[in-house]
Length: 119
Image 1 (tube, one colour):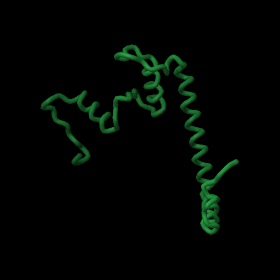
Image 2 (cartoon, rainbow, N blue to C red):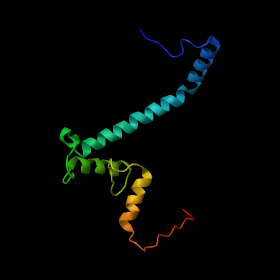
Image 3 (cartoon, rainbow, N blue to C red):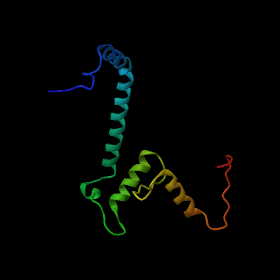
Image 4 (tube, rainbow, N blue to C red):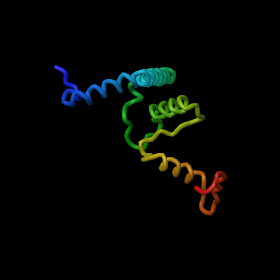
């Protein structure tokens, strides 16, 4: 037995929902195609980098020689067409990742110039 969230709607509202669903269906189909395309890209990269079950096992300690992490970072770099990537659960947000990058490059009393205006 299947239930729909539309079952308890007034008929007039249910008809409008159905009309809008039909109207946006072409866009939903486009999104579904994009999802399948991106999923295939990721799976192809997993194959290219020979990711195996052993690469997806959590590591303990400091993670030295964590081959799985290295492969995942290579996959991200490949996917986003960059030279390298850092993919770590320790980064709490994009701002955190940017801060880590800046702290690694700048020393006390260094000057950071914003060429595009005030940060």
